[in-house]
Image 1 (tube, rainbow, N blue to C red):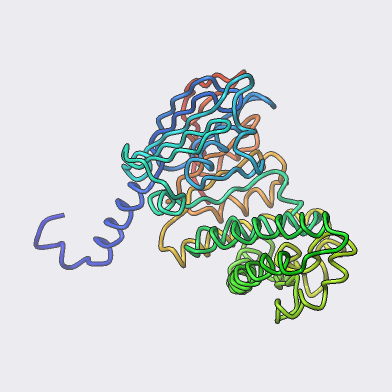
Image 2 (cartoon, helix red, strand yellow):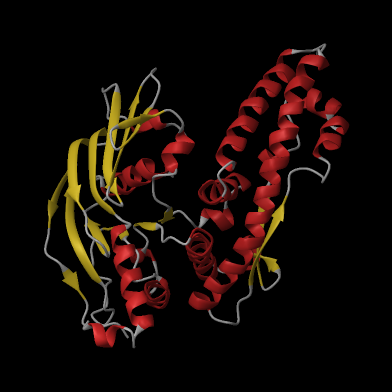
Length: 388
């Protein structure tokens, strides 16, 4: 733009600079070694949408899972990173370039996990995550967020909270360690030494109060963003709400004191954030009982789009979207609503068995990779005629 004109269009110049900045905040390369079904794999990735196309059990989801593990140090599919190691191998390695910075993770059985940023080893996961990106995972089993157990909704909160609150991940892990130890003592002692049990109780209270406070804060914020997402993809007639349901009374220490005999009788800690839940309601009624399956699928999409919008608002950064095999499962109306709701400036990686569901008028454009038997080959670019 010529110097004499530049000053007349400050908003346009700001938008262009913002677009350039967003383009740089992306995953531009990914390497896998002995991860799931992949012996080795290297991918160069571009901004916008990338589709990994192939049949079931060919490795598509494992690529998205590898991105999530590299950027967030956790898998949406398993609790243990050792489960990700290729069969008959002793460890796996992941690396990639995020926003121009090299990240690397090495996980080996019975050895300490190793993390690197720009080839410098980092001892704490919290420090590593300061250099990595944000992630929203959308999977074909997200329906369980409405119909499944409270554990699924707690994991939903944990994944989001760890990306918003720096101390959350550490507080959850400290709480879980103390909970395991306290439960072991409750199981083993018919005549309990309460001084030993109460030592862990004190740790539970300290970190449990922090976890519950941050979860409450998160649910209140999500309630706003999820309501808006629901209106976008479900229509104004459906009012979606989220309510935090804590697993303890307000005074957690007093709750644990009052439940001592019950805990001992059952051999487990019966109150605390490990019993938290989120009540999901549609038009004021429990969604798991009164929403149709179609409404439940819309709610599941809204829960994930709400995550995206909250991350964008509070972290001022767009997360990478990992969309695992959901477009083919949606009816045309919900598919169109979802594609309209996805921010076009995001980097989006999807898996699908085909692109036959893609309307010609969608305006969506994909870089395509074909996946078969743990092998990945680049395909031709696919695009619609124009977004409407």
